[in-house]
Length: 196
Image: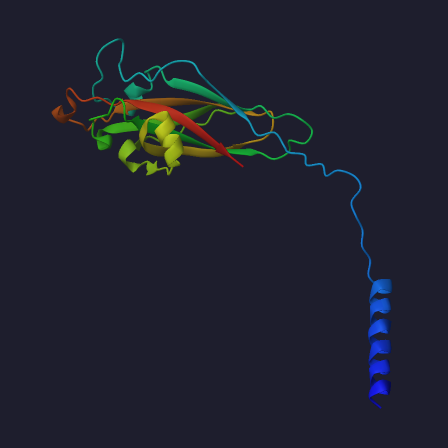
């Protein structure tokens, strides 16, 4: 009886093994994997520095109308990706940053800025106090490499492959400021941060 049960068990195990081997399938890749990435690159060009001065005089509180006569800081952002696999737009953030190397001592509630788009279509921005600009959380490695103390978000946008956008930034002392701005300085740097 034990011999009969053992024989049946061996037959069942053998049949199961043969069935599993017959029904299972293994395949091995013979060619290489190919991974294609899209282009991710922007070009930044600027033409001059930010001028708070009017006609060579020191900066002073002024109206937005008068600030319109100041030479703006003009810069262009271009998505240089134009290859056939570059179909996704690039996101960008324009930030104005205070610097560790030359700290500013002007109260940001006394400074105004306006960012106007000039191309591809003209669009006048809204005049805003710097103290109302939202802080932007740059990574600590970027802040350290660029010598940035605090970063302020001026604008966010997207650029299609091959597209360009040009902005004019005007920065001036608000007309409501008083003598408290005398002998104060503001030092800043524009940084354009791009991401997918």
